[in-house]
Length: 294
Image 1 (spheres, rainbow, N blue to C red):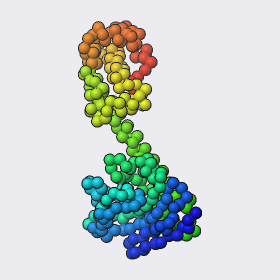
Image 2: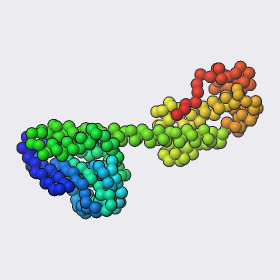
Image 3: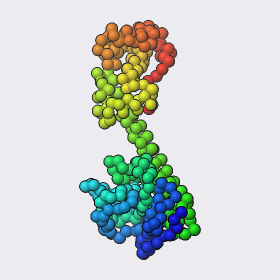
Image 4: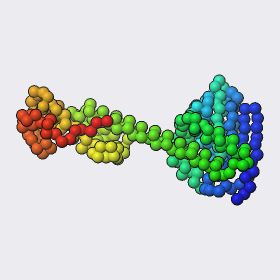
């Protein structure tokens, strides 16, 4: 193993620790440098190119980050990524300058890890939850690099725990977004089931493609969107038969069936009873299913 030698640069509001340039670590991921800084108003860096991946965790304040012809305004509890060999520029806000901790690293697993954390997509930044434990991990990276007695396993252990936190945040965010899609889709069906709606209409309204919508419905309800609409219409028709005096033809039209005879045929096939029989025996007691609710 190469000797773990570090060099520390320290100023009043800034500290940075560098590994020996010949250091190559013990795994497919290597930490090369780390630091923290409370920036002065309008303090900037770049335009410049980095040799390794570099993450900046914004602890306080705000600033702007320019990357591939886009400028992003970022603030506390966000982390932005600077990939290697890409020109970037970042500047602290003039009134509320940011404070951040940065970690520079590389290795054959770096790209896949960053993808799992939510980077390398359309935006070069993600959010993080500033818990006490998470902040301790960030500070441990900087503090431990200055401590010659701390070994590589401890340093990388902290870094992998940080990646674990970011990945968990990404999964929570993704699940929340998927749930929002489902709520929007099912609410659309409940408002429009009496119309001649198509699955494509729902996908367009939600803002996702049909295959994505199909996957969400199958994973959550074990029903395709088309079957969900079908079930919801018949569930509503059954409730109207039991709880109102509306005619069968009115109920059929109210539930999106333009042809009454087709409705009656499908209703019997679906429940085992004609609409009239279902009403007479108080069909709600015969139902073995209910439309899925979110």
